[in-house]
Image 1 (tube, rainbow, N blue to C red):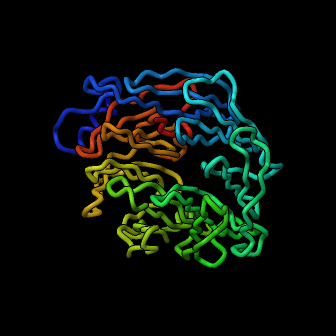
Image 2 (tube, one colour):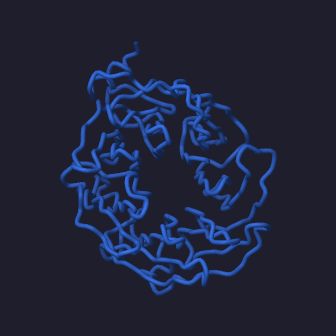
Image 3 (tube, rainbow, N blue to C red):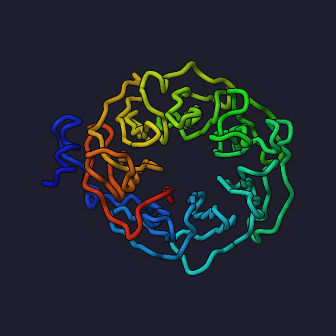
Length: 367
């Protein structure tokens, strides 16, 4: 058994590990799309991981700062850096994109969602949400976000999540981009509701700084809201964020379930299963690791530290959470981990990494 496996076994009850090529004989009918980037950030490729744990790699090149999203059987590759494009593929057919369009020089696209026959794209540098025809990619107008401009020309639109009412919920980071490092202009961020019939903003909520939304693993009518700026002025972890439950139907935000100050780390990606077991990615600004999280009690279990940079975590229908590890750059002697790692959040155990040619950077579950 590898050193990494021994470390992971130490963090939970002695039960069967989830292994990357064992799905209990079930055909889960899923693919994990994985945007990968070279360790020196000079190139990127798209890979896919099937339900059996087999990787098909180097399907086509990406830029060095990609993010991948999946909706309704389509995979979207958002190339940021100097590229600033969106490519839409029919899942499983990687020969050519169905649609490809530019979001504009320097726009820095962050997320995409489907609103009827329109693609809604958030850009970090723009003052609008951009609308594109789903069939052609041609521009179909914009949704004005200027009421939430924090003074630098953009409210920094980020994550987009479809709600149980069919509307889109978009987070606005509201950074002061004139300062270094970036942080929220006034200590707050915003969630706006976009109605897909009118393509207009119909509601807003003021929340904590740098908000992000993810699906609630237990209750599909709700979402998990993560907040928190990243750095202090000296580039230490700011620890000003928390995790909440956002109820878009009731229009309410809960009291904080877990704070960064309590945890002692920045809170990153959260992904879990219907039983209420989750994986939480956390960092101290220089080293990343995972915690196992109980979504009922909001208690955390620390796992053995590793030297890794972790950018994403995605839950799959078998109750596991896949976490993408890249070799870290912290000055520690902890084991270096790189690859796709299947965690069982119920037992807080994990398999050895599944390798990709380039380390994983962004992931999305394709149904």
